[in-house]
Length: 120
Image (cartoon, rainbow, N blue to C red; front, side, top):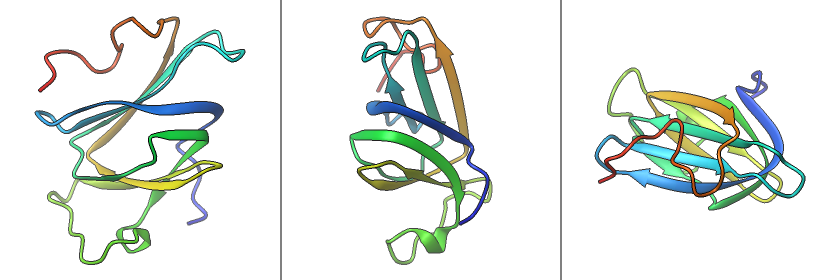
């Protein structure tokens, strides 16, 4: 690897929602434990994911398909990018067309600022 991180935070992140209809994966760190904001990470056009449901101190880096511990994976589109999700407790991978992040004042019960209904 050795690439510059795309995103890095010492907070606790959780897989919050996945929508099959648009291949969207939402990972969230909610307010609490000293944090006064909510941080959301949205992957769009997800083709592959292998992530731990809870990640402690998350760093997202560009990755290569040959770094994924699954054989013979070929992305469904040339625009698919591979991401490595590294945390203190796990390492995961996502292949997706795009990645977005946002930090806001949203509460745990507020709708996502990145992922909008309807969810299918």
